[in-house]
Length: 184
Image (cartoon, rainbow, N blue to C red; front, side, top):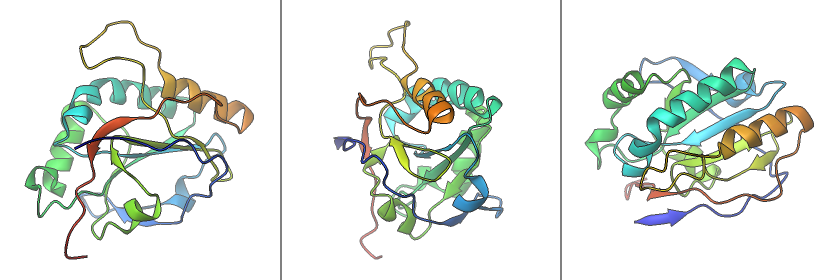
């Protein structure tokens, strides 16, 4: 099901969390909230929208990381329902696309629900106080593969790093619905 993210709720405070990557290493909000801000992304392996942007996402996040902006990705899908999103497959997907950021498993889906994540991809750009300043898309590239693009996420995170505030005009991200468990 195709969904759009809601508009940015400027100043909304990031809920605390600690999650593990597929190798069992722990990462927390508190340890990753940096001077230049933090990008938290909800992604998964099987979503065609994430697959379509994966290489651009890898490049853009590498740029952000090199500029001192921390990046975390969270996979909240019920991987018992969608086996392609399992932790083992997350590790393969991350390596395949050269992700430099931690890719974390939201086993009980609490973090996805606390953040009110809607779809994959869903981007949350926070300033150094953990206040939401961006809830938009990666870029303005259409699904038809237009070669010229405006890196909206990179531009927004750079603005947040410099000023603590995100752009007032933001275009929602679009993607597949998060696969919520019926048993939790």
